[in-house]
Image 1 (cartoon, one colour):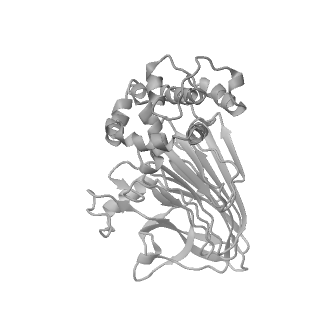
Image 2 (cartoon, rainbow, N blue to C red):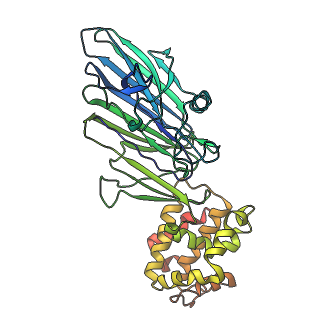
Length: 409
C-alpha cells in the first residue's frame, strides 16, 4: 500500500476528515463502496492545502493503458456522533437520510474534473473493517493515455455542536491516506499547511527521529501549550504577514508503498499536569492577571484548586533551589512564549515583566515593590544586595531577552 499520513492531534477542536480519492467498486448486493486495487490508473501527483476550516486537494490521475477506462472513486468519511445525539459513542451509526443530510451539510463537499463540476453520491461503506462509515463516490472516464485533474474541496473546521467528524474527546485527527489503491508510486506530493489563530508555530533544526524534533510553543493569549514534531523536515516555513499565517510546506517525491510520513501537533490547555512550568508562571502573577477582564473567570478556578494556600507550589520552589534550574525555566518560557508570532497584549505584558524581574532577581536586585520581593523570597537563592543593575552585570543572552521582553510591557 502506498501510504502518506499526516497526523495532527489538536486537543482544542473535534474534527476528523480524510483526504483520499480511492479506487473501488459499488458492491451489487450490499450497495456500499469497497476499495479495490487498480492496475491501469496512476495517481501521478497531488497537492493538499490545509486550513483550520477547510481543505483543498488536487489530484492528477493518468490512464496508463491503451484502452478506455471507467473507474469508480470514493472519498472516505468517518463520522462520529457524540453523546446526546445517538447515545453512547460506540453505538452503531444509523445509515438514514437524517445522518446523510448532516454529513453533507457539514462537509459541503465539492469536486471538479478538468474544471467541470463532478457530482458525488454519498453511500455507506461495504466493509466495516475499512475504518470508514460513508464514501463520496463518483465515476471517472479516461481515454487511452489521458490525464485527469480532480479537485476536492470540503470543510474541515471547528465542530462545537452536537455532531462531530472525529473523536468525542475533543481531538482533531487529520489523516491523509493517498494512492493506496492506484498503480505505481506517487511521483510527487505537496502538503501545505496554513496555520492561523491558535496554531502559531516555529520550528528549528528539525531532523527525523532525533532529539531535536520536538518544538514547544506557549500560546499566551489562548492559554494553550503546543508540542510539535514530524518525521520529515518541511521544505519551507514562512510567515505571511499579509494573511497572518504561518505556511508550512512539505514536498515528497516518489512515495514508496511502505513509506509512512507523520507530523503531529498536540495542544492542550495550560492547566494540564504536563504544563506545570507555564502553570507555575500563572500562579506567580495571578493577582496581576485577575485584573485583566475575563482572566479571573478563565484561570481562578484551577489555579486556586492547584495551589491551595500555596501548598501546591512548595515542591516547585524547592525544585528551583538551584539558580541554574530557575534560569532554564525562564529561558524556556521566553523561547516558547515570546516567539515572533506573539502579539502584544496585557497578559503577555504581565508575563514579560515576570521574566524581566526574574533575571534581575538572579543578580540580587532589591525590588521596591513588595509584591516582587515576596515572590522571589520563596526561592532560597534570592539574596537582595543591590538596587541598581546595569548592562555590564548581565550576560549577552540576558540582555537580548530583556530587549525583546520590554516591547511587551
